[in-house]
Length: 372
Image (cartoon, rainbow, N blue to C red; front, side):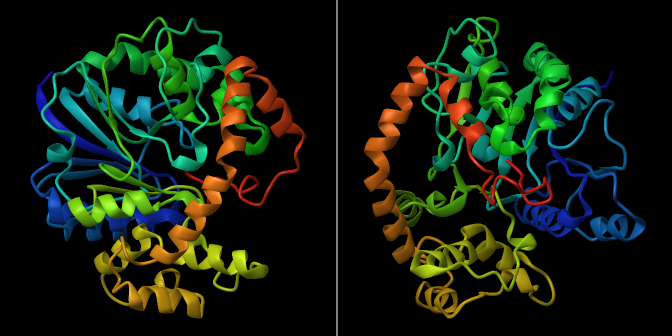
């Protein structure tokens, strides 16, 4: 087996997300021309292959088949194990709904081989308490994180093969597969997606000693998710330090947005405008070659106004709405604190309550619109 160095790995199986995949590859070509890239993309046709050849990437390959057992968004351990088996020493996983603004290896840093890198989950989904996911999996808790881990950007090495095998095993288990067939609003908290299982494993007795470096919101990554996707504090950090290397468009995707969508009331108009002003969309527009597609265009006068007064500079664009939603979040903080205490004591109760609620619009979406 030939020992190779670093590689960036991307996986996507939805043709409807090809534009986002291309934007990621364009951003990589601008900042990571010397790093090999492997793209697992089964829908790739000759037109896509020819387009890839035009990129300023020294070594990029497109795989039209996925490793055995890989499906949906439960593909990361399968693909990373396949590349490690080919001899790569260090793998950087990047979700297809991420854009990069700088050099990926430099952003991760030169780390010892035993350190795994993952990201902090978006602010809206931070419900980890006292090793919640590990407890729900039935594991003995030996480590606790203040929030769930997000697997949108990861770094693994040959040292992590046992963890990846175990992660893959759990994602292929009947219990997890049954959970994935349920509507997302009633799935068990620890089996909502692959990253919940990863969080559980890293808190367990079996893997608690794996060192973890976490990419922090605002500093290292922007987790664009809903009204909490780019807070005032994160914007201030970006004004001082510049945009982080990774911009992750979680939840609903702008390229799937309905141009005629209307939400009632003042708050509804704010939500639509804030979604249009996502830092992902602003940066994507600067990367996009050729005509600007409709999803990058503002849908309301408020969106147009805030883009103009923000000079299309992500930390300033949408800043007034970020302040509004921050105040709204602070008003809900006491309720959130109570919820976290309840989660720590009775981990099953929230799942029970969620299962009794009717599915909200965002929770009833298919994987076409939802990618964690």
